[in-house]
Image (cartoon, rainbow, N blue to C red; front, side):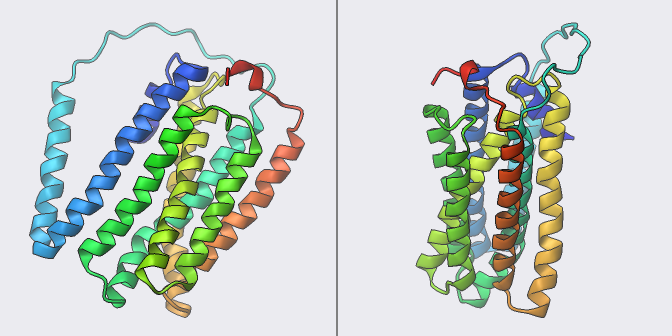
Length: 277
């Protein structure tokens, strides 16, 4: 419930560069939190489990306090929504699909890698650093996408960074050293940052029903987070702890084929004129 409302609120009444700036600012803010969270939690776990839990309770209480202190603006009457003439951009569907595949992988990494790291003798703090590096890659991608606009409604940047993500998973699948894991986390983080930003932007830019689209954006993301740990755990039970990373490569690769098909079907669609580059 929380994330679709936030996503729709960010894009309310905005298009083009204004929407891009608002989404970019939001993404940068939450990615900084995602960087700091694993670092602090990893350090706290080296002290005691209760320290990590206490940190979570403290930050959650602070967020609740901010929400309580926030004053709601007066509601404005909105026109009744009507379906948009011309249909929906294929990039909306491509964004949802790529987001689903990558968050299947994110779910697997979050659940399985701490166990892999501990089995290899990595400390909780080191594992926290790796996850912080993963989210730092999101931050880098968000800053670049906010600053440079030439990626919009162009397939090459999206497919290129998904290929970079596949290389990252190759490191995670076959790697055994801290360096290979760090490379894998960072490269895959660049990929996730691209697909997340793209999906959120495409589903709201020049689309009338922002609320529904934001809901679908989060539905595909959440479905990936739900399916990933289930199949990842199943595969790990039958094979090795790192085999699910090969499954991630398959999922991302297969959805890239579907994305290319969707793009080919909608190749006559162009919105580049709406966005100054």
